[in-house]
Amino acid sequence: MQKAMQKTKRKEDWDKGFCNDNGFCSDCKTYTDVVLDHRSGDTICTQCGLILEDHAVDFTAEWRNFDDQDSNNDPSRVGARSDPLLDSGVLTVNISNDNKKAASCVLPRLHKTLRNPDKSLHIAFETLGMMADRLALVTAIRDHAKELYKKADDRKFCRGRNCDAIMAACLFLACQEKGLPRTLKEIAMVANGATRKEINRMKELLKKILEVDSKTTNVGDLSRRCCSMIGMANQDMKAVLETLNKSKEVDVRRSPKSVLAAVMYMIAQLSNDKSTRDLTLHDVSQAADVAVATTKKAYKDLYPYVSRIIPNWFVKLEDLKILCLP
Image (tube, rainbow, N blue to C red; front, side):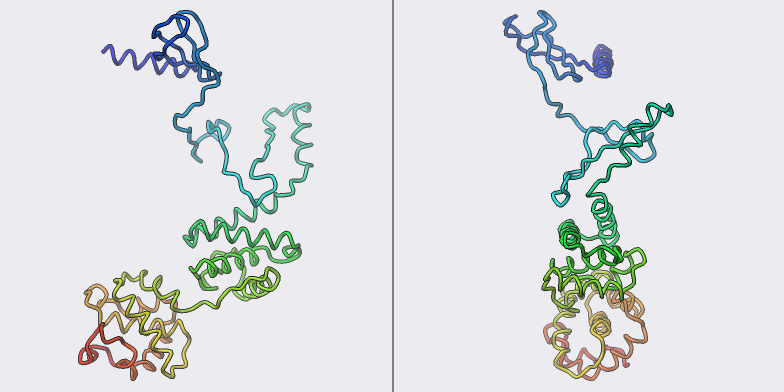
């Protein structure tokens, strides 16, 4: 009961901005009760009134604010982290206009007339962040895409052009340079209406202006991600990648993604994992982002070469009879 009363008293003191604790007072030469004033950051002795410490830093947890709460009662003390790509960081000043009197409306009205030079960049960076979140990209790719957009903006490249297509192109180039490529179709799905043709055109222009040496997207880089989408094991992924490399030696005139889908379907049938063997042609085609009819045609072209392209360590030659006939 006594501990509960002390806890209640401590909470009341905290709400008032004070908190009692024990500390050594140099004047009293003993340990006394001290008061922590969280508003001023002072530690005060209750016996003699001596300020034992001033401007103390509060290391307690930061307050949080949620969207469903009142936006006018935000208890958070800090904003977003500073961005080195912005000249003014991310620090901005917002002057409220809650009071509708004429005198209080002058300052907010004058504030709106001031032009923030980083406003367009700040909006573009937020849009790039949302695009990256939709694709579940890592922070390194997001920051590199912002850096590319900043360089393009400094060279006046963004004026009079589709900014959504430019941001999508920067995201595409950042994925390629970081070794985690995405297809133009995937980028276009989060590009706020920009088409693949526009993104591809902006990508080629950016490569010339920024002198970016980005390699062509290799289907082998996409194989691990496509295999992970249908739950393939690491051994199956390794077999898919090796089969793709050997398929370049045969004369199969199909698109790289259709060849990937056909190879994935072959390895899925030969896998030791039952859940992988149960995958249908539709499941594999959907993971590789290829039509089922296109996968069937590529499978038919690759089937005569299965003994040459599928690695021997993965399956025995006599077990290739398990494969479905095209």
